[in-house]
Length: 334
Image 1: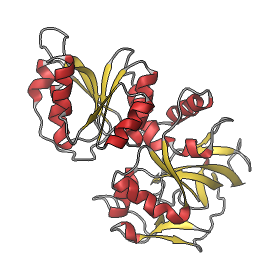
Image 2 (image 1 turned 120 degrees about the horizontal axis):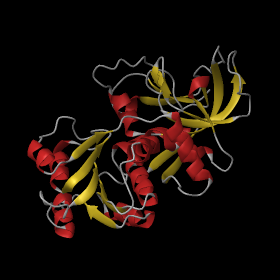
Image 3 (image 1 turned 90 degrees about the horizontal axis):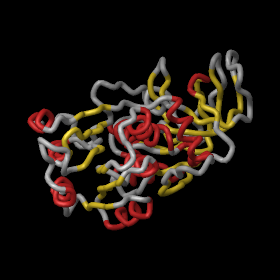
């Protein structure tokens, strides 16, 4: 079968589309799905480069997120049959992540544990479903499962043009928040406005923290005036302290990653002086993904998909993610 295979760590040139990758067969507790759509995440860039402490069993088919239809079932998979449309939770509880510790979604077929399957409702396309797990699932858990945003909150989203970022913008608006979206180009800012963001900031030319203070007033330690209610920051690095500075008293800093550095300069004075809450959110669960598919099915949300590419162009799709040239998700249809 055709598959996008990583044979050794390095740059994107280490990815190769092959035509003779072994097609999997169903085993006990597992099914084989015909992959109809798979999406990239920045995690795939890290997988290609190699990550300290994580030994990837190379060669491996990359791709965490996938949706498709079952074509073969193994023993012990009661409740599932050939033809069922399924979204895959990429976390295998025994082995780790699909596309990292075992073959993932950038292939025509994939072997998946039945425990990872989530039934797709009618009216949800394979492309929309495949956009969900890592990006929108993470956003849903951080905002909705943890109940961190309420109607009327001022919510500032860093990295708003990526997969998690667009998910946060969409869900925060659905919850009734006033959304400030930060991105790095005029085109992305225009698209974020069209997506529903109330305000947009070009972080390359504007200090987002100073902008928020000028817009809403300086946060006060004795009252609840000034600043924003929530900052969503999965960037880390040199954005961390500026995020603290623009939060109002009692505000929340939500974090689910650190793409620009996990060990930033800290200033604890803001946390105690303004009684701030730093709330971590890790990954997502089946109920997050099922809830998101229900939202798609009833028209409440629509995932942002920048490009849909054939498998032969998958490496270019990951380059677009790596170089931050996309808005939302890149989908591959193997």
